[in-house]
Every structure is written in C-alpha cells, then in structure tokens.
Image 1: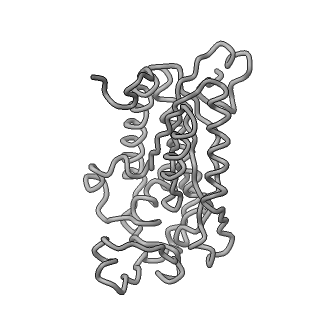
Image 2: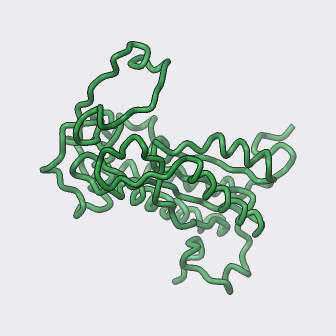
Length: 258
C-alpha cells in the first residue's frame, strides 16, 4: 500500500488528486551523544516521530504530508568531538525557508517544523517568514511534548544523551546502542549563580562540560520507558496535526474567533 502521507513514497498521480493542508518538516542533527548512542540520534528519532505522527493522523484527515528530514543542524559548540557536522543557523533557516516557499507555491499554508535538536532555533525565522508570506509555521520540539508526564516515566533528568534519549534509542534502534561504553553524564556546573538559576544564559561548549558530550545519567534507561514516551508524544502530535488540518484559515487563525 502506498502511504500518501509520505512525500517520498507517493506519486504525481496521487498528489494531483489530493488537497494537502499541513506539511511536516523534521529537522535534526549529526553529533556526538555520549559514547554509546549513534551520531544520527537526533535525525533518527525525529524522523520516527514525524512519520509516526503523520501516519496516525492520516486516517482522521487524509491531508497531512511528511517531508524527508533535514539531517544537519547547528552544532558549532560540539565541533570538538570528531565528525560532528555543523551548519549555521542562517544556512539552516535558508533551507527551511526555501522549503516553505515551495510548499506555499503548491497551496500548503500550514507548516509544522518538527525539531529534534536543541541547538536549532527557528523562532526568528518563523516570525519573519510569517510577516513576508501568507503562511503559518508552527514549531514543535518533540522531546518537550510529554514533559508534564516525564517523571511518571523516567527517574532521572536528561539534558543530552541521558536516561530519556537512551531509552528512546533502545526502543527504536537497540542494535545501535552500546551501554557498556557510556560515560556517566556528570557535567561541570556553571561558575556563576545566575547561570545556575537560569536567569542568565549563554552558549554551552560541550567540550568544557566533560569528555563524552553528555549531560544526564543513562544507567536507568530502558526500552519500555522509551516506548511509553514515544507513544505519548507521537499521539499528542498526531492529534494536533488533525486539529490543524481541519481548522480553516480565517481572519483570526490561529487564534479563536470573536
């Protein structure tokens, strides 16, 4: 069966008979994730979430389309680790903008950027393109979708390559996870109290955090935990895609009327 929600699988014959309302563009990164997770972690899990959410949404609306994921992200602060691939935010923004312009030419005005890498920051670009074009762009950092249930599933916090990310990897591609080589994820704390409290922020050079590019303990990770979190997030995203696809664009969109 041809999956018409997958742009890379459908064809001109089928597309010509469809009216797509929502396009989903996954974005990830190629970078170190402790010593035990694949370099393509962000690209792999984000591709899965985007595809699964679109597949779940399709029977309810038949008007969402999943684009192939952009693999490279903003990783200048991880370049100390071998074979990290970095593209600037300006380059990434330009790529995403051109994709959105193409989609608009084909009548799609609702776009969801499904992001899987914390270093990618699309908010300024979204603000600008919505001022320039009659499109509506929504940003979803997928790993945050289930934060209200995080502690029901996981025992430890995860900033990068800890329990949550390792659990997700164990659920999706266990053959690529090597727990025996993982570092402990202990990170040097910030020197300044303002940084520790969070009301001052700066870019984090991961090479100064520890020698294995991780912030979070992976030792309590389990595939079952990863599956629970993935199911929660994919289900919520799918529901949003259905609601977005069904919602008409009027003078108040995306706000309520009246």
